[in-house]
Amino acid sequence: MMLKQTLASKAMLSRVLASLVAALAAVSVSAAPYQGIDDIIKASAPADWRTPDPENLLYLELPAGRVIIEMAPAFAPNHVANVRALAREKYFDGLFIYRVQDNYVVQWGDPDEKNPRPIVHAKPTLPAEFSRPAAGLAFDVLPEKDVYAPEVGFSGGFPAARDGEKGSAWLAHCYGMVGAGRDNDAGSGGGTELYAVIGHAPRHLDRNVTLFGRVLQGIELLSSLPRGPAPMGFYEDTRLRLPIRAVRMAADVPPAQRTGIEVMRTGTATFDHIIESRRNRRDDWTKVPAGHIELCNVPLPVRLTP
Amino acid sequence: MMLKQTLASKAMLSRVLASLVAALAAVSVSAAPYQGIDDIIKASAPADWRTPDPENLLYLELPAGRVIIEMAPAFAPNHVANVRALAREKYFDGLFIYRVQDNYVVQWGDPDEKNPRPIVHAKPTLPAEFSRPAAGLAFDVLPEKDVYAPEVGFSGGFPAARDGEKGSAWLAHCYGMVGAGRDNDAGSGGGTELYAVIGHAPRHLDRNVTLFGRVLQGIELLSSLPRGPAPMGFYEDTRLRLPIRAVRMAADVPPAQRTGIEVMRTGTATFDHIIESRRNRRDDWTKVPAGHIELCNVPLPVRLTP
Image (cartoon, rainbow over all chains, first blue to last red; front, side, top):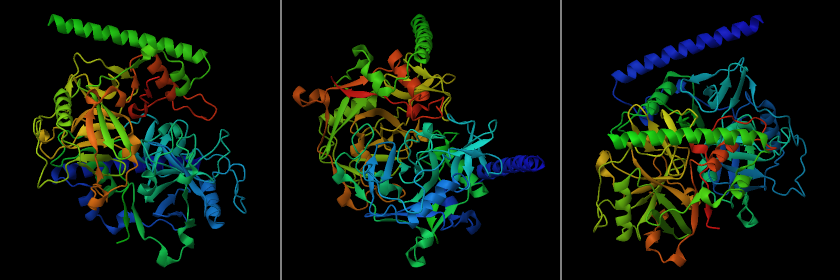
C-alpha cells in the first residue's frame, strides 16, 4: 500500500513537473521564432536521444531492405520474449508477408494453416497482453482529449493510452505499430503471425490485440506493397506473397551489419517542443494552426546514429 | 431572414428526427443479433444508396486502372468547376503522379515548374475554399468528441466538421480525401495540383487547403505506390513518375465505359446502424468494444451498381 502511494505521488509529481515544463516551453516558444521539427531536431542535444536496446530491436529483412521494429517489453513482456525466441530459432525465415489490407494492416508469418511450420523453442500461443497495470509505468500525458481512451500520451517512446479509474494502460494502434495477430480466442496469438498498421489508426483494436512494438524504420517497405483483395487483403494470388529473408534480433547481428539508430526520448522538453510545434504550426504555409494534436499525429523522431 | 429561419427550423427538425431514428435504431440493434457492415449492406434498401452525379465524378485513369473521385460542390464549388474545366481541356493527360509521401499524401499534376503546361479555359489559381457557412448545409452530427473540431459528422456523404460559434463548416482530411495543393499563398491553388490522403488523417490540414472530393474507388492504386524520399516524398528519381493516362468527367465518358457506382447515403438509419456496428463491435473476435468511433474510422460504403 505504502509502495502504491509512493508511486502515485511520484506519478502526480512528475505530471505536475511535466505541465510546468510544457508551460515554460510554450512561453519560450511564443517568444522565440517558430521552429519546425527539423529545426528542433537540429538543435537537440545528445541526451534527447536514446539508443534502443539491441535485445529489443527486431530486423525484418525483406528483399527490398530492412524494417526495424522496436519491441516494448514494458507492455508485452511475454510476447516480446516469444518473438525474440521465434527470431532466434529463425522461425520467420522463408515465411511470407501474405496480407496487405488497404488503410489497415500488413501481416506476415506462416500462411499455410494446414502444414504449419513447426515451432522448436518458442511458444505457439500465449495469454493475451492487451493491457497492463498503469502503476509503475512512466506515462507522459498528452493534454488533448481522445475519442477512444480517457487519457493518451507516451510511454518509453510508444504511443499509449491509460484509464485512471481502471488503473490500466495499453499501447495505441497508431500508424506503424506492430502487434501479434490472433484468432477469436484472446489467447490464440503469441507472435507467430505479426502485423503492422499501415493506415488510419484502427484504435478499435486497442485492448483487443497484443501490440508489442513499433516500426522505427522501413515502414514504407510494408505500406507500399500491393493490396490484397477486399475486404481482408489476403493475397489470394499466392504469387504476390513476399518472402521474408530473415527476422533477426539486432543483438544477434554482427555489429558491422547493424543499423545505428536513435529514437527521440519522449517526456523531454525537446519532445514537448516538437508536439507544440505540430499543434500550432506557425510556418508561412499554415493559415489556421490546429491548436490541438491527435495522439497518432505526433511524430516520434528516429534518426541514424550521427 | 424568413428564408433563413425556415432553413434553420428545417435543419433543427431534421436533426431531431435523425436523433429519433438513431435512438430507435440503437434500441432495435441491442435487441437484434449483431450485424457487421457486410450484413447491414446486404440488408440495405435501394433507397439507402445514391448514384453520384456524373458531373461530379472524376476518373483518374492510371496505367494500373481507374481511380474514381466524387467531387463536393457544396463545399468547394469554384474548385469543383475548375477541376471540371481542367478535365475537359484534358489538362492532366500525360502529366504525372510525382509525389508519394508515406503516411501522408499522393500528389499529381505538372512537376515542371519551369515550363508549366499551359491552361486554356480553366483558371490557373482560385481564391481558397477552406470552409463555408454552416447555414443551409445538411450535416449529420457524429456524437463523438473530436480532437480538431467542435463538431464532426457527415454532409452529403463526405466527412466534415463544423464550428457552431463561427457558423462555418469544412471537409475533414480523412483517408482518401482529395484536395487542391497550393503554395504559401492561400489563393495559390485552384486544382492544377491535386492530392489524396493516403495515411493517418492529417487533420491539421483542415481549413488550410481546399478539399473538394473523396476517392470512391481505386485508392489502393495510389496508396501502394513507391514512396518518394523523406521528408516530402517528391520523386527525385523522375523515372518513378507515374504517367496519368487521362482525367475525365464521368459525364464525358461514353456510358458503356463508365463505372456504375453507388454510395451509401449518410444521415440514414442504415448508415447510423453501420456507425453503431463499428462503434460497438459485438462479433466473436472483439473482446472490448470501443464504445466510440473517430470520424475518419467511419466507413463510407461504396459499391458497384447491382
